[in-house]
Length: 531
Image (cartoon, rainbow, N blue to C red; front, side, top):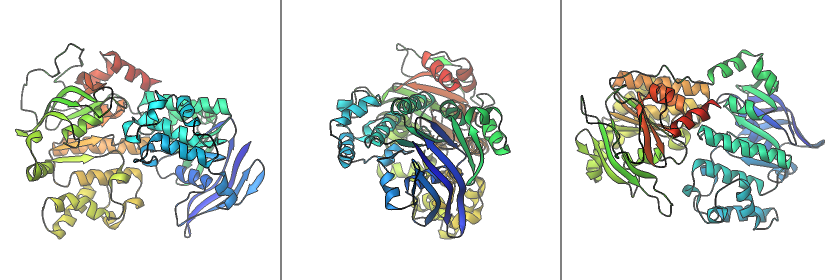
């Protein structure tokens, strides 16, 4: 069986955004669709699903098993679900936050006249641990990898013949990304699914797809057998993608405290504070005995973690999904209820502050989140987004705030003339630059980045990492960089702290930790990236 598109084009008004494009989804085969942010990958998927946003118009010929189907017709809509399943990029955004996983799966099964009992079987099939208990839990109670498995199970509820996986691993660490793709590959083989794998991660596509389609700014620049395209790319853009997809471990930033701790492994009997007696200047940030235990979770998310961070230094919190790295970052920022421990910024204890006092000191801390599209208000112009922290803290008047917004946009490599635009008018990399500009609005001493480059393609990831390294160096920022990406950690951080199961198991000079990992978990992380 085959699902085919011929001469697909997507327009907004008179402007062509995508195409002309031809593709075939064949039962039992995997088609990889690759390209940078804004290349048209997701537009291709939405066109196949008949889910293009309002204002966009698709033209072309759609055929299923030789039968012609008019795009956007009722017959096209009928393919959605029954014939074509969809695994979205962000499962947390796609899953209903106020309904249990079981309720959502049973609703989908009933819509396609399948028995409720299949919900447990599907969760077991996607290798989710304790599926019976999982049915009773809510999406936020799962890790990123677990939520992606749930999204796959939901897509399978309708027993589709084809499955579109749109960037299914962009926010996952290397090991879990491999597990999710191994699962999709097993489903492809066992059920004869036609799989469309959309990704900016070329090595992963190369490992799983038989055919590949390379998109650039809405145009197909190369297509063919994946092995042939990757071994001998014909188009300069494909060669550029392959050349830039891997970031080296070495060549990271140098700083005043880069060699303060050399690859120190922590064992279960080690004291909770892994760093030695203070030497040199006092740290800007100090966190001691940080603990967090989420309700009903079997184990703590943070287990007696301590760290320090100096001005002008980058410290990467590195770990897999569920290791506690984001929890630690949010606990330090006072964004988690129930977190225990003490945090100081200079000699001011953040954990002792409340109300206006806490709000005032937050001027000194900038935050960049993982998904800039979710963290930027879609109804606000960029100038107002960037200047919002100044307004909140009562700094300057309207004219001076807007002037400062223009300066910040320029500082992060954007044209200040774009300040009147809205977030949806920018690419993913540009939106992350806007988020960084906003985080710098109050001239902070500390910048916290939570997986700030995980959803970006290789080209934009390099640009944002270079920008962060430059800002840290020029502004003397202390950078707390939460990531699962080893190469990204090396690009911006002098030191790396490796987390596993809520504890720091190794901390030290970034180059030393990645070249000569001492702890078994760190060695596993390095090995997983090399696969």
